[in-house]
Image (tube, helix red, strand yellow):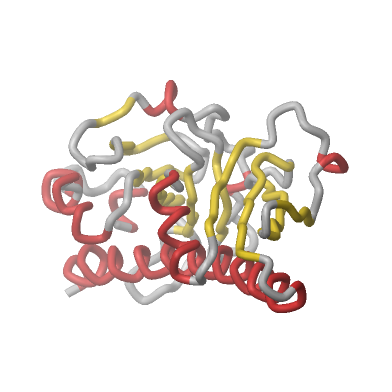
Length: 220
């Protein structure tokens, strides 16, 4: 991978980047960039993980050298966040491309992504016993988002979610029956925390799995 990012391994794509393999790790995007932010190879697929989507058309904000996901030159590390996309919010993790020994300097950046579609968000909510939805913030001011509301025997909590630029972009809503107010609120707090932690862990897991199947065999 390191050699590929430096432009020294032309066979890398044919040997390693089969989109059909993405079903195994349940991702929708993988993009390789050099240190100048130039796209070396990349693909974004639809929810069926079968059809490619035009990258420039799908991403609402271009991934260039100034993008927060590309800032691995001085302080290599993992960057997690949400990128605004047409199909659905794209949960991404950005990783510096290092040598197989994890030594630097970085040769580029690898971005892995998964769409936060309504089905996935609802499933994450079910795991914590709440109804969950993620909607665009749109023109609504952050101050206008009610953290809590009650009605029809339910209590709803809302959390504004920033994109990778730190700009408020989405609202996560979780709803639970208002059996006992304190319990309902605690459930929502737990659900909000679980959602954020689970999505982050998913992408870290996808990166580790990708590294074991791609980076490690090449190093061997």
